[in-house]
Amino acid sequence: MSDYLGDAPVEVLESLARTIFTKIQGDECSYSDKVIEWLTTPEFVDAIQPMFIERDRRISFDDGEHKNLEESLNRLKENGFIGETEKMKIFWSKEPTETKGAWSSMLMRVVTVNKALDSGDVPDEVLDAVILKEVAAIECDFSLSPMDKKRTIDDRMKLYPGFDGISEWLYKHGLEA
Image (cartoon, rainbow, N blue to C red; front, side):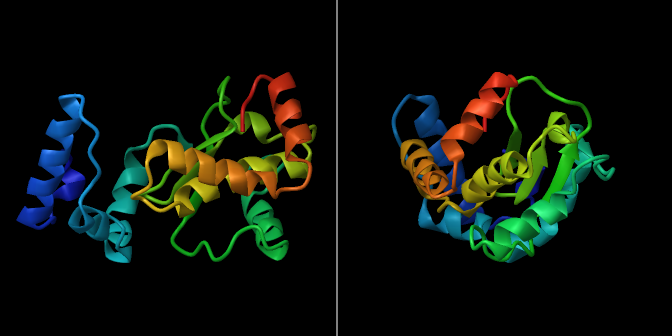
């Protein structure tokens, strides 16, 4: 459990605890509707997101040197790949990492993009696709199983023009989308 749940109603905490203990025992269990409803309210994001961002030591508050994350989001919006992102926050990572192009928190609605992609050598389409994949993850229904979530994201990425080539580009540069 977490201090992020400090304001949660008792029935939400009890249900969440039952789910966690069931999963620890190795049984498959979904979060209850009460838990999902409480965790996915705009009020939860408004209250907890700033604390999450402050605590995440991987996040940089600096602008990119070569790439602009807001411009990437705007290209994705203009081309109809994503909708409004008003509660979502996007940041560069403090340091380049060696694996993922970006990562996100569905609940906190935060995307962190690998600083390695802040380069003039990175095509805009690559940056946009990496961001799109994380936005797609955030926009997934919280109640989906991990397998269904992956399938939903993969299906959405297939709609992005040239995604196979982008995946190859990332692989050649030691990253994954």
